[in-house]
Length: 253
Image (cartoon, rainbow, N blue to C red; front, side, top):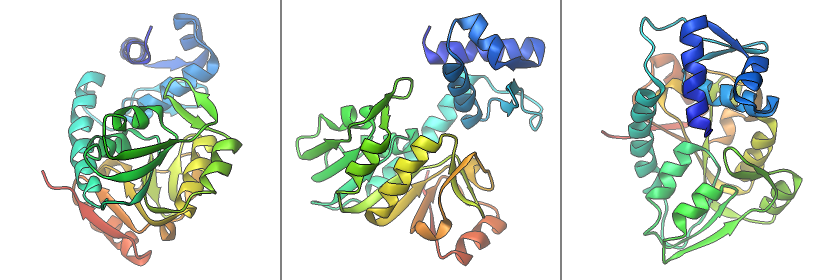
């Protein structure tokens, strides 16, 4: 069973029973605890569930829960707008770092016709860009995260440290006063080094990511030069970014 099929089945279970545990996911779908946790992290990223200690419940903030397929369609359009605007910041000959997030993947789709050197730890990003005749791709080697097809670990961090990039595109789960956060520490360590090795850092985040916080903080707001989002955030978010001298740009519809 593919991950998306499994996540739809998890949502069906939640609608019937109200909650699900990691152990139940393992038993129902014959997967490891790590795989079960990754499924729940992905569902929370799409705002389809609220994670609890040892499992998940349906979110309580909405009167009507959209289907996972509907959420994917909405998010995809938002990410496409953000990705298209992000790609416009890349000039001919730039050295560009792309992390492994899905929003940054949308940016990669608009970089195919560019003339640039791209460094990434994402198999998805490398595959997308491989059709570009003027793209020079450096795929960072390390341990493979099988479900999301990206590479991580000390070998990746050490290799990133040898590069000097003009611009980095970074995806997030949460942006708050605590900084930029992600669910997995290993992924966050790679992002942190990517930021350190880049002259200009652009975070790509739809409006739902503001004032959210996740497990691991991989960067402070001061480490980011620009955030591209899909709609104007509320005033308290704008004020937070102004205090930390982070520029905000909204991708046009």
